[in-house]
Image (cartoon, rainbow, N blue to C red; front, side, top):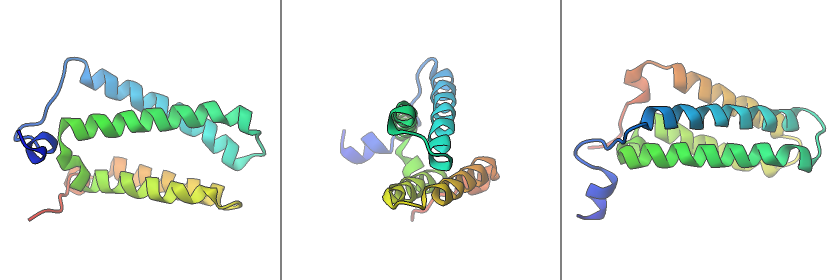
Length: 127
């Protein structure tokens, strides 16, 4: 088995309970985002919001790994590309004073992509 067939299997992989794992990761991600959002919008100490950042990063990473393991085509579909774009945008939060604006942009991208028609979310860039 080569790396290409490992990342892009002919048929998507799954496991028993995958749907529930995905729901759990998404729910934890929303909890984390709520806490991080509070930190970005209000004057909150690092100790208060750090656990929420850990939840956000861990659950987001789990979702990315699950989607990529299921089928790497996710990486070249709009839904995957926009997730990677959100990560790039979030890296800009290190610039002081921009956190709330960045949060709004990321939430806007998330909302639009999660509720876009399937033909948009699953659009694939390949030959």
